[in-house]
Image (cartoon, rainbow, N blue to C red; front, side, top):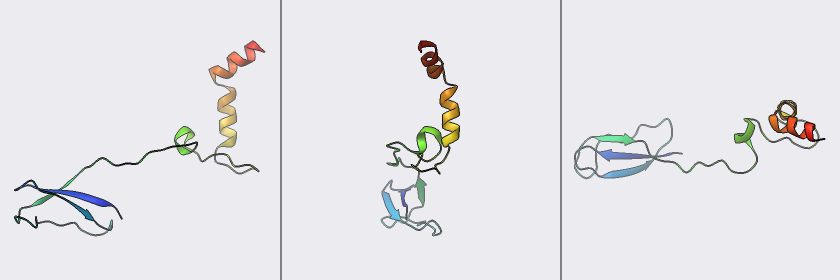
Length: 89
C-alpha cells in the first residue's frame, strides 16, 4: 500500500496517510478542519544491478529463454565498439 502525503491549505500541517490505491484520502485537516491537498513527493525507487534499466528486458538466463537475448547480440554486433574491435583484429 502506498503512502500519500497531504498538506492543509489553512494551517500548512503535513500528514502522511497509508491508503489502498482504491481508497479515498482524507479531505479535512484533523488539527484545524481546513481542506487537505495531496502532495507529490520524492520516492526512493532505484534501479540497481544488471536488469531492466539497461535494455528494457530482463537479464538473459542460462539455458535459453531470457528477454531479448537475440536482440542484444544483434545490437552488440552493430555497435561502434564492435566495429573498432573487428578492425583491430
